[in-house]
Length: 77
Image (cartoon, rainbow, N blue to C red):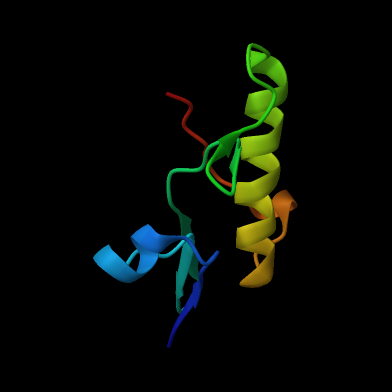
């Protein structure tokens, strides 16, 4: 079974993008940034931007039943 989390951004409609996807027991979260409504959050504060992006990614995974305690890997670029 496949489930998705969408955030309502325009790119989702244009490119069939989803913030997170669950297929059976696996959950994958796409690239996440400290952006809200097209505005960069915490400009100039890399630490807070990172925390915000991780919080958004973990919240999307949680919506699909994957708690943060089950997180296997994160990548920061």
